[in-house]
Length: 315
Image 1 (cartoon, rainbow, N blue to C red):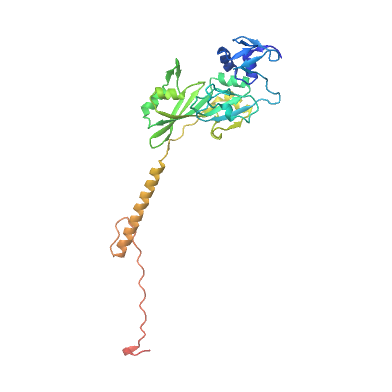
Image 2 (image 1 turned 180 degrees about the horizontal axis):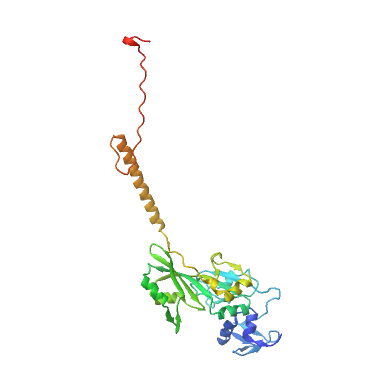
């Protein structure tokens, strides 16, 4: 095996993308033959003992091939495959059936939910992370119903960690009794804290879900589950980023369930009372009020023929 730059070795082994591998090297998480590695180091996987967080690096089996996954991350899960020092659950807890050593393309916050892509293809991951045009779509549930001025202010963005974070599109997609769901889209922003942006604009955030990564949707992926993807689906993220744009939808009104039942019961009571009143008035010979149904009158019965003959004689 020829000598290669260390970040390339890590990416080819499925540890992380090259960019993430460089971060791991800078943080001192990688060693070569017992020595802490640094940026610019090279290594031979057949001759050198390379360790990541104390674990010896081994190459993937040749028959594994390239693997691409879409994972629906639950809330309270760390977006990494390595064990968490604090013992919190990671993505690896949900991918036991995957034989390849995959790594996430990007990340979601610990309390964030939604779509994460994973692969063991370092080159593909790098091309996606470097693309400036991929659209990421989030749905954020907030308390209350934001005024148009608050949405306009959100569209202006905010400076977070010395970087301007501004959404490409903002719209309210769902209104509930005391809550709203706001859909936002970001173009080529990479890792970002959506919740922090909303909090900077004084929204009270309850939930953040990444619903789409480009044209790929989390809709058909069960929570905590994953589906395999084709390489062409990930290639389309870079080649056809416009597929990720979501057309505006009319705002959906969601009625409170208990309130809906109460209104339906009240409506039935009113209808029953009106019907009963109409029947009582018809029985008493009084005309029904305007708008109420009148009780139909029965036709008069024909008089019975008398059984007596003329002058009182029986027939």
